[in-house]
Image: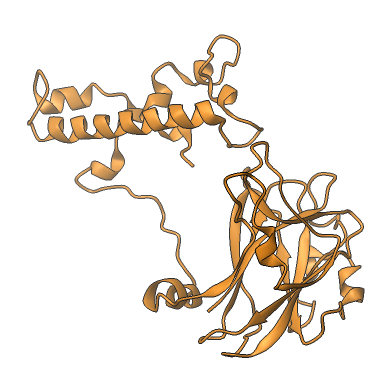
Length: 287
């Protein structure tokens, strides 16, 4: 998602006008569906125009700096730009954003080996909006309190969702291990109203971790859930709701059949932001 205030167009009329919902019908705040960063349809269209504008402006900058375009001297035209319009990545010594590094395991999984995978994707849905829930029934072997639905206004962002401050709700999925024994879980993290789930493997369809599932997770004591239990914390500080991928600690050997369990833990005062306690599971992959 493009942050509009990071683009050259944002400074054309000043930040006061940019965020003035009353005087400016195109104000940034008027494009969003929430307090965060999710634009409406009109916002997406405007962002497309902004991106196209920026590409043209960057091309002009490159041409001006090389003396290959413009009405006057390239350096003079370049110096007339305001600070926010400068493309620092195009400087002789470019200034680049800090890179986001993959862990060695992620590097091997997603880049070096480009490993094929199998699994289940809970974000799937048909164009008629009814979804493909039937394709999940053969892998879900137990479900107590989780519901598959789309929780956004457009009703197109599906997942298995649970929301209960008391916790304890349980979901179990049957899996067969892949060549490399790696299991990946994807879920949504957000800045408020989300909580923590636990994930673990065993051979039973039932919940053998009821005690842990009914106990709030203490942020100061993370790691004490057990060597085979992985806490999936769905709350963070950034004002955004985005998918997160977690590689589970437990390996599942090639051809090995097991059951992957999830349970929502009670709302934790040491972690919670907001009154709710939600978790949204997007999918599971085995490599």
